[in-house]
Amino acid sequence: MERSGRTGETPTVEEGAVEAGAIKEGPVEEGLVEEGPAEEVPAEEGPVEEGPAEEGPLDDAERATPEPPPGSRPRPWARWARRVALGLVLIVVLPVLAAQISLRVNYTGDPADGTYTRNKDAIWLGHAWVDGRKKDADVATLARSLETTGIRDLYVHSGPLEHDGTLPASVYPRARWFIDAVHRAAPGIRVQAWLGDVLASESPDGMRLERPETRAAVVESTRQILATGFDGVHFDLEPLHSGDRNYLTLLDSLRRVTRARDAQLSVAAHQIDPVPAFHSFWGTVAGHPKWWSQKFFGQVARRVDQIAVMSYDTMQPLESTYGGYVAQQTSLALEVTPRSTDLLMGLPFFHENRFGHWNHAETVPAAVRGVRLGLSRTDADRPDFGVALYVDFAAEAGDWRAYRDGWVR
Image 1 (tube, one colour):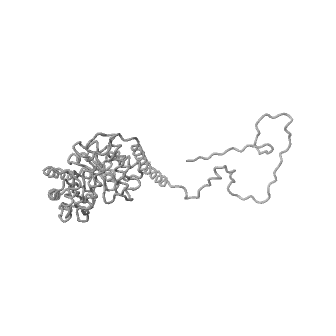
Image 2 (cartoon, rainbow, N blue to C red):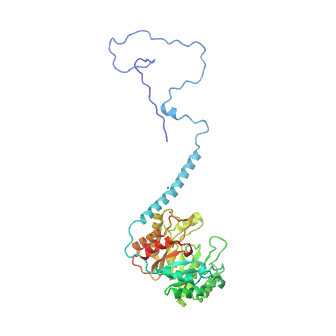
Image 3 (cartoon, rainbow, N blue to C red):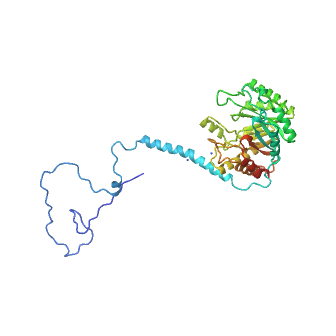
C-alpha cells in the first residue's frame, strides 16, 4: 500500500446613433440642440407575419456554449454516479499514495554501525539435495560457498507432507547422505528438514489443521524425519490465516518433540499487518488475508526456536518502497519476537515478474538495506538475528554478491 452562470452587458448608445426613447446623459448646452421633426423610417410594404419575437444579440458565453438539444441534459442519477465513482477513486488512491510516500521515507537515513551478520543466517535449499540428483562434488561446492557467508542453517526441502499429515519416506531417500556430507564438509552447519503443504483455508483441497488426527500425523512425521538425523525441522504451511488456534496447538505439540531430541523448531512466517487489522480488510476485498496481525506473529514466535519472515512478494512497485517495507516489517517483527527466538528476515534470491512480485523492485540490495534500517531503529544490538535466502536453485551471482557486500562484511 483518493459549475456556471450567465452574464451580459447593457449596450450603450454611441455618438451619432439615436434610438427612440434613449436619452444621453449629461448636461445639455443651450444652442446645441436643433429642434425639428424626427426622421421617419419608412415601413416595409407587405403583410406582417406573426411569429416569435426576435431575440436580442447573444453575448460571448451564449455564442461559445449553444443550448443542448432536448433530452441531452445530464440526468440527476448520472451526476450522482459520477460523484460516487470519484469518491471511491479518492478513497482508494489517496491512502495508497500516502502509504507509498511513507514507505519511501522509511527507506531514508543511514543504518547503524555494526548492523551486519551475526553468523546466524539461513538458506532454503531445493529438493534435489535429498532425492538423489546432487552428488559429493555438489556438497563440496556448497560448503566452499558457505565459508564466505554468515549462514548457519540449511532448510532443505524434504516434503511435501500429505494432506493427512503423513510423510512417505520415499520422498527423501538421500537425506541421510546429505546430512552426513554437510557435517563432514562444513562442521557447524545445521541441516533442517523443510516440510510444508497447502492448507485448505481458502479452497476445499489441502491440509485441515482443525482435525486432531491430522495434527497428530504431522507430529508423528516430525519424529520420523528427525530420526533420520536432521538437526531440526522447518515448517512452511500456507495460506495460514492470522489467529489460527489450531496452528498454535500444533506448534505446542511439535515443540515437545523437538526439545526432547535437542532439535530446532523453525517456521516460515507471513508478513505482519503494515497497518492494524489490514489482513481483515484484504481478506474481505481479495479473499486472501495474506498478513498476520502483530499479536499473532508474537504468539507464533514464542513457540519456536526460529522464525523466518517471508519478506518478499510484497506488491511493491519500486525498489525504494520495497526497501522501506522491509524496514517496517523488520521493526514490527523485532517488537514482538522474544530474544530467546532467532528472528530471520527473508531475502529474495529469485527473479520473477508477476502480480505481487516485481523483479526490478524486490532486489537483494534493497532488502538488505531495509533489514539494516529496521534493525538500527528497533534493536541494533540484538544478537539472535539474521537473514534467510530464498532460494538456492533460483539465485544468481549478483544476489550472492549483494548479500556478501551489504550484509556479511
